[in-house]
Length: 223
Image (cartoon, rainbow, N blue to C red; front, side):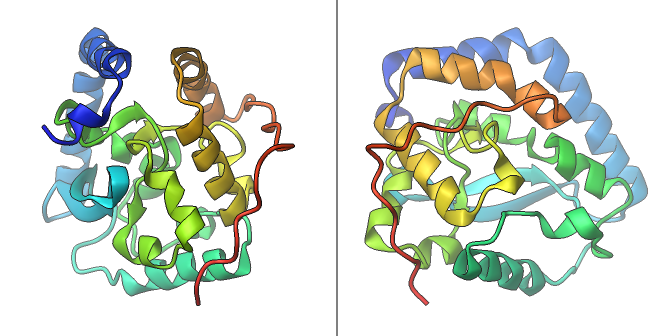
């Protein structure tokens, strides 16, 4: 796989080892979520969407469907663009309630359970367990050239931004953390992020803010 070839050997082995080790855990959970989606909302169980991967290469991301069939997507896209332009905290639209969500959809999205099928993207080498959040095509088109450095690492199921404030941080802070990660990939950093992912989801604690003394400010996105 072209995507897998971009991974350091240790990182690819770590991905495969953890996925295999946790197989008895994630498979039953995925099965239960799939059954829930099938029972509570008529339509496909999975949702596929083009995302931007390593070095700007597009791939199809796989998620559990959490929105009703034929739900309009332009509302979410417009909301995301508003957050990018205004550089406000990256609070999810469904955090305040979204009628387009299926029953239990808010919980699935808040806990990240809707993203479990991305394990198959990891197995294909399109993603890693740890890396920047995979951005949409429309979002990527709004990046300034300097901001596109965040795709110099494979996108991940979890990452530095996810365990370091996430929805409390702004778009530029997310970009800064992702670029920092892409320039400082290491086994120790990946392990720290993996260990802190579940507590971050549960809201118990997050990683300390990044030292940014040597970080360059990212310019505004193109409007």
